Each structure stands twice: as C-alpha cells, then as structure tokens.
Length: 429
Image 1 (cartoon, rainbow, N blue to C red):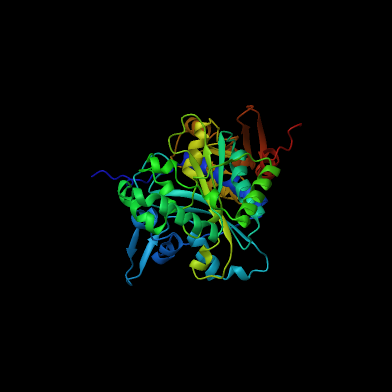
Image 2 (cartoon, one colour):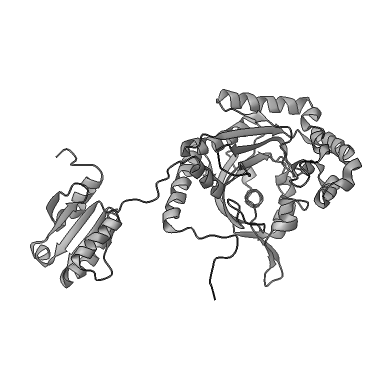
C-alpha cells in the first residue's frame, strides 16, 4: 500500500521550512513595530462559533467545513478561518474590559477547508492574520492596510495592487441590499442555484459569484457607493486620506464585497500583478466587522482585520524571483579521531550548545575524511578536530573553512574563542 499525505495537504520539508521561518520572522518583526500582540487559539472550535461567526449562508459553512461529533456528542469544527476564533476568545476573556484599547492581535494558524485543491489553495492552509477590536477610528483601517503592505514590501514584493471599497454603515447596506434584490429578482431563474439562495439571504454575495460573473445583470448591478449616506462617505474619505498620507496607492472597486451581513465600511484586497502568478491573484482580504462581536455574545465593539495566506505569499515571492534564505551555515562540526575522542566529543558538544554555539558531530562512525565531507555538506564555518593527542594536551585544532586557517586552542578557551570568532571579534587580528 502506498502511504501518501492526504489530498490537499503537503509536507513542508526542512529546506522549505527554513523559508517559512524566515518569512514568519519578518512578519513577526513588522507586528512588533506596529504594537500587535500574538494570540493562539485552539485548532478546533464548537461548530456554532463558525455558523454564527462566519454565517450559515457562506460557502465555508455550507460546503467547506470539517465538522465532527466528539464522544460527548458535541459538534466541533476544524478551524476554517481565523477571525471568529479570535473574536470568541476576545469575548470569552472579556478583553473589551482591558485598560488598553483597542486590542491589537495577530496570529499564525493552520486552517482547514474542504475544497478542490489547486496551487496555492490547499485543504490544510497556513494563514497569518490580524484583528483590531475596540476602535471605530478610520485611522485603524488605514493602519491595518499599511501593516499588510509593509509585510509585502519588506519581503521584497513590488508587483502589488491595493483595491478598496466602502460597504457603508447599516443604513447604507440595507438600502443597497433592497436595490440588489430589486435588480436581480427579474433574473433569478437565470442565476446559479447558490445565487438564487443568496438573493434572499445575502444578495451582496451575488456580486462575488464566480459562476455568474459574466451574466449581463452583473454589469448593471447597483453599486454600494451610490447608496452611501453622509456618515459612510465621510468615513471612507478619511480612510483614503490616511492612505494617501502614508504614500499607499490604491484603487476603488465598487464591486469588491465582503459577503457577511455584519461587515461594514472598509473592505480591501491586495493582489499580485506579477507575470505568471496565476488566475487567482488575491493575496489578502480584509474588512471592518462592527457587528461580529455582538453576534458571538460580546458587547457592541467595532473590529477590523485581514487574513493572509502564507502559501500564496510564498508563490508571489517566487513569481517575483525574490530570494529567500533557505539554509543557515552550521557554526561548527566536530571531527573525531579514535574512540576516546568520540567519547569526549559528547561532553564537548553539550558544552558548546549550552553556550549558544550551534554544533554537530558524526553519528555514523565515519572515517576522518568522510567526517570532513559531512562538515562541508552542513556548510560548517569551523571544523574542530579532536584526537587522542589533543585530549592529552587539553587542546583542539580549529579550522576556519572559508580561509583554511587553523589554530590550536586550549579546550578551556574553546567556547570563548568560538564566541569571539562567530560574533566578528578578532577579524582584524
């Protein structure tokens, strides 16, 4: 029987994992500078969290969730997205009562969605996201967008397009909702089955349909921008002004929607325009959700956030030929000659590692020449050669692989010697 990873999942092997770590560390540094704190939520939640937090009418809830009953008969769901769990945690732990507001959080999490696997879209996917809860200031919307753009810029992406829209406040959305119902009702029988249901449940989501995107009624559908009241227009203008003050280019797309009823005001997507990136260009999507926290049992609290797929981020980096450091050189490798040296190296490597030095040794009983070849494969900066004579003299030979220079170093001074060398000390000696 052939044992393979389940369809829609992949193994991230060590060389690739090093790239992931590099990207994640860059993102964490951006979050630190923007004063966001990390949150980690469970891999699975009570199914109701997503039914209420994502919406019964969405494809995620209707078609894509991995849901199961536990032994106690409770319905649980593997996390398909990140916002609802973070909001659930915000409500459960009463973060709305924190002295410092707004609460600014980020997460790295694996998501699970049952959909047709394709490049950059798997059934188990990795996502970075941020959520800001506790402020209705449009400057927060601009800051969240700026954070996402900063992540991409600092990783080296340049072929980007930011698209924004306003979904308006509750009054504006309700007026637009009725206009959409009036517009699409005469064409109901021509729409796909999903859109026929959306016409009643959430007509705005019709605008985001992939099957009916070329239907003539789509081109003449009323725009949300035509139904924004004075408050919503003012809010959107402030967001645009703040983006312009930060030098962030954007396009307004009146057809950009976030399909859930509690989304309002700012919606945005960042897309890759890199040649050869693929048909699905969206890298990140986000928006303001000033109703979700109440939906999950909390007090009226505004919020905004986004989710960024890490697989798609790595694809964009590859499309723009951005080099990601994939492997680090090993600090030092111990080559042993003889049984006594092999035994002594166990104690020595323990001491080196406990003093912050990255070290490895041979575990295959190789000959001396083969051990040197292993050091080359690991790109070791220094090779430490230890034999019976060195043990008797309480010294060790240290070879710098880049230059070929060798020093005989007292074992008692080895840690200090390597720390100096690795930190750049003695470069001019």
